[in-house]
Amino acid sequence: MNMYKSYQFRLYPNDSQIIMIQKTFGCTRFVYNHYLEKRKKEHLTCFDMIKDLPNLYSEYPFLKEVDSCSLRCSLFDLEDAFKRFIKHQNNYPKFKGKYSSKRSYRTNYITSTYKERKYENIKVDLKRKVITLPKLKEVKIRGYRNLESLPGRIINATISEYSSGKYYVSVLVEVNHLVAKIIPKRIVGIDLGIKDVVITSDGEKIKNEKIIEKYEKRIKRKQRELARREKGSNNYYKTKRKLAVLFQKLKNARKHFIHQITKKLVLENDIVVSETLKVKEMIEEKKFSKSLTDVCLSEICRVLEYKAKYYGKRYIQIDTYYPSSQECSKCGYKNEKVKELSVRNWICPECGSYHDRDINASQNILFEGIKKYVKELI
Image (cartoon, rainbow, N blue to C red; front, side, top):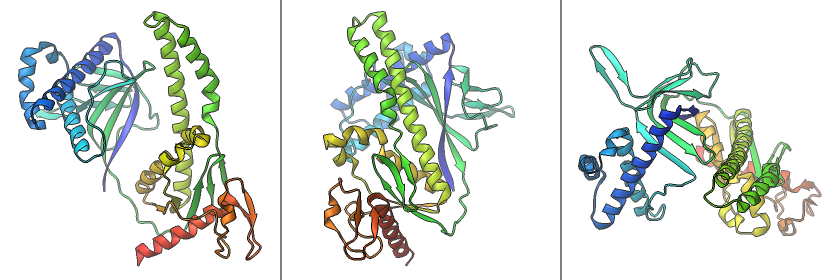
């Protein structure tokens, strides 16, 4: 089975390479905005825009200085934005701003053979820790110390600059991944929460590390410092960059925590069952909005889904409105008094079983997941 997998590396460009990257950001943004303006007046397909691109070169010669493939990719992005708008997946495409928090451009992999010699515009050498990119040539990279080479065929590379001033390159690779058929032997139900992020049907609780609290004081201090700076001054931009570094550290800490949890769940179990969460509706309640944003429940579900698929496991989501907390996992009695979130422990009036609210919910989720899995088999 062919799968797409991306590998992100930290990029360490020299001064001349940084200038070229910045020029490419500007040119791709210019081409995107130019044809977005044109599309407001007349209907143009992606092929029409690419065909018209040489005329733009003669009018604006500076476009010839950067990688031509990156300019075509920006037109593919514009076409994709319009397709999403037509399908009601997002709003009408907007013009790209110069001072956005993250700037990036994409370039496609191209190969050719001349006099029995193979030429490639994108090459990754993990032994020497360098990547060859169009117009930039060799750039130092860091990441994936345990890999000797990228497995599979390179599709494209995306060069990004974050507001912290750091550069990254994400290489998309097509991998021929063999997924072995697994006979399910171990199944787990999980209840997702705030105090404990994951509660399993085995009784294990993974506590919320409250990552936002670790950085909150430092972020607030830097925000106050930024407010005192004169806008547009050197000190203003220095403080702004330091603040961006803190936000990136917070983001990376969350990402690391999510990957730790999801990998453990997928590797230890053959089937993972959870509820289908409507996080947007949950965030509307101001009481829990900050905590819900910190734990990233929807991201945990998303990562679980693709990791289960990669390892040949199953990830099942049950109905959002299934009363997992109210039902007794022993006899099935529905206790509506448990609907209040303040009730953390309760005794079943029917069979007398003592329940921890979250563990009982995860066990009910497990049983409902088994029912759904059996129905699929039938």
